[in-house]
Length: 575
Ligand SMILES: Cc1cc2nc3c(=O)[nH]c(=O)nc-3n(C[C@H](O)[C@H](O)[C@H](O)COP(=O)(O)OP(=O)(O)OC[C@H]3O[C@@H](n4cnc5c(N)ncnc54)[C@H](O)[C@@H]3O)c2cc1C
Image (cartoon, rainbow, N blue to C red):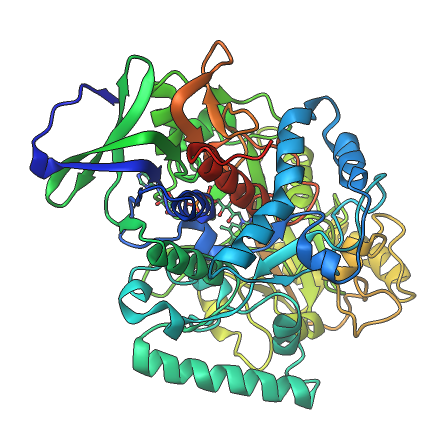
């Protein structure tokens, strides 16, 4: 992975900072460094910029952020620390956690003040584990403000990754919160119908004129705003250019060799290289070695693009960095179902919003529930991995009735008025006219499933779930249906036909990553910084020790440590 420096002028470029990867963390580093006056180059392996970030919900966990402050939420800065100490236990690394919590609000203020990246608050989104001391109920999340693709400009827009097919509607990304609620209540509210009609008509027009969605929200808005900021600050963005080897001279990283259509280029970087290549969710060999219950590595359904396959980790290791695997989990678990398209291709659908809605439960092949399904995605999946006996396929089924499916949709199978036939035909959605029939179609133990549904329904009619406590935390209730009472997460499953979707272990990305310090510098085996080498985003080991205490805990740290690396490289770091 290292190279001796020998290249002709034609195959050589110079800059101050070279960034490998163009997701949130890489672009945040690039924009910050460029704003501080550095000459920056970003190289991206894929033909489009944006990585997993572009496919993400775009939420960033940043306690104490300026938007929360402006809304009058003045939380004691110790509160998130108390929460994290309880969540992380002996994996709480005070220096890195402090670097994150102290710099997160500064990061938001910096981008708001100096760049195209503007934010909208997610003040009402609670932390996941409401019962844990210090858990916040408000003021912890921000998301990129919606962005009009026309402001990006046609040339740059064509170079940005489109929204993930599985989570969009005909290529149109839908924003969590009021936008999503309007889509889910389109048949129940005239206001929602109006909103959705307006959005959809504009989208059709954009498809006709630009061939892609132009009302950018969520991860695509974050990437577009960062990429536009980078362009404005003169950052050179190079796509289809994977970094292949680091240039290491006298123990200092001086740049990298990058492969392009014109051949290899040596890019020398006076202030160093930032590894931001998106971790290793698609490296089957590392998955096999590190993820539990993945005997061949291929059982796991990773959500990020295929290009996030461990290059940054290997580059870091080649310069003396080490992969931290001693974490609560090496992987940011997500419950995922496999979508088979008519052309034979396969998609991965993340079950983010359906599990907490009233009238669905998750069961194993033995017909039994195993977790509060309305909790976090990580919690659902890690509980499933733990509950399925060794030797059996790790899988669960989300089970609901006709009323639920038509109102909220189940996974990729969209709600009314969209037809269900394509989902039956592809085998995605299983149907039974009775619970017994559904169980047999899915291969679930029929008597046990009938017993589980009967027991669940008994309490669900009064809005209770004594067995697992659906609706018992602020996070549960936020993810439920606010229009459903008394419990926004609980309704009986009793109006056939009944439906089920098979859910498998997947991920939003990896938590295992390169060992770094609070300045995002990669540490060598002697725990000293490797000069000229930074790792950010999912190339850096999870600052939260492989735990998942809140939504947004990937992108909040990715943006913050990107910002820190950019500042540190520019010599502008505030301590
Ligand atoms: C569906 C989905 C929803 C999610 N929602 C959220 C959310 O709401 N909040 C949250 O916090 N997290 C969320 N996540 C997780 C989050 O998106 C990722 O953790 C985050 O985007 C990772 O950012 P990154 O900068 O590390 O990498 P990425 O955004 O993946 O970017 C890495 C880039 O590096 C490129 N690359 C790889 N190898 C090379 C190489 N050799 N040379 C050059 N370039 C290379 C890749 O092609 C890629 O473009 C979600 C993820 C998914 C998939």
